[in-house]
Length: 220
Image (cartoon, rainbow, N blue to C red; front, side, top):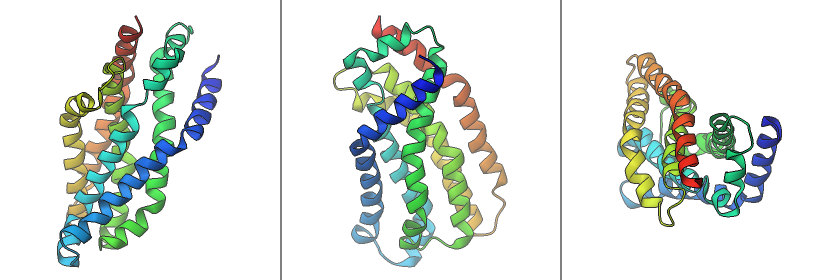
């Protein structure tokens, strides 16, 4: 097995399990659609709250995607094969996260113009929102993979995953929503985008190693 063949196989697995990805996307759209219906459909309410609504929905959708990232591999024994494959386990985990990020976030970005219009997000904030999603969602996946690895051997680990990783999600959500709100009222937002990039780079460095340690502990 090579890194390329692993990435190709991972993409094929995600394609076969496309129903899981579709469920996460539908959940994302439904959460956003319920806010105007259930709370307030006026532009005066939705426009300032749009970034927070979209980011909260994105966090919930990503949680659905990452919670079971290792479950099937753990059940069928392929996770153990990765550990003994002789390849770098942190790099394999990073490739797995990259494949998951691509298949989940890319559709979110494609439908974002429609959802932004639904929430009356001004054009001044739309492109900043897209940048926050591009810069911030990698850190959400990288944080999530640590929780998924720590709970992979537990049968009911979904709640534990949320408890473990939600506190780490809060800075990402805060910086992202503040950046969009700053853009909407004409304030500088470059520093907030830089903080999102820094968080993603930080977890890019540490998450694969922590997840690899947790996976090895689980399969042993």
